Length: 431
Image 1 (spheres, rainbow, N blue to C red):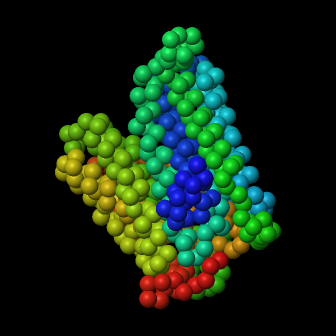
Image 2 (cartoon, one colour):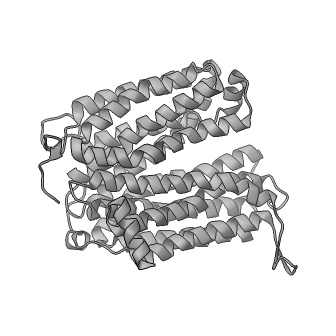
Image 3 (tube, rainbow, N blue to C red):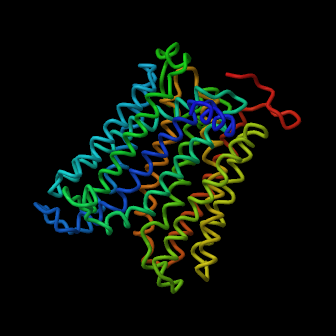
């Protein structure tokens, strides 16, 4: 087994702890994305009831699904700062995964709308312990010459997990109830089976981190660093701090890619397509991310971070606007795929650039700016498209393209390269 693991680590050319953490996030990502499909079905089922506080079921579903993301993004700066102070990334990740496993299991016993809201809120807080500490750990296990590649590998596996969950979630629910053992005995409903599966995935992630991941000495030795996120550039060479700028750019990027999520009826009506095509178009973005994140991240280690971020934001402009003019389902799929490629050119290099700028023991605080901004952008995108779609199908996508234009200007004017590239090879030393 150890020989197999060593060959796997060598294949991806990253620190074994980074790859183990990536696999752990893939596992909990499968379980967490399961819930995105299962929870709406659970809310409208006969299993859940109780006080609705005058809200329609659709509104309750929206609150439950968005609450985790909202709390997760809001709490991340605090947990990132705490992990810097404690200098114990692994402990925070384990705490978050343990909380995620416990809350996944708690759904089995939930019988009211209010209990679902509470459980989902606790999940958001649990995820807030995982994300900044994980990104900080990847950053501190990397060096200047391989940080982009490490970020790419980590994000690739995380996205594989997130994309794989919804594919099987509906089938697991619909195939229930299950008899355990198959010959009879205990009966498990399709919903409970899905919640048990999500629990096992989070527990698997916890086990992988426990066995294969350890804190680097860097995090422990520098836990007392001065932690702050300035808005203005303290060096005086630019107007805005580069990490703050990257956070704003990430917010715009996430909002632009999330515009598509909540306007399925309008998309299907315009393109005269069914739900299957919409699912494929929605997944096209994730497919492009999985294919391009790692090679783009590694290329940014060789050729610099800023060129990829700038080109990615520029490519985001036509690929976002193009969704408003796509004439066929196939065209929409292609544009969504290209938008995913644009996102891949921004994600890993931006995290790597911010990691280059983060001081020793500051990774949790600094990089949480980008992860928090991404979460808020994903939450804002559906709200923007929902508010603007009434003014015309192209309007939300034109607004998203405008955000991409502004983000491109910010990258061009406020972000500088962190690698000294000579002849295609970074000349800076390891961190």
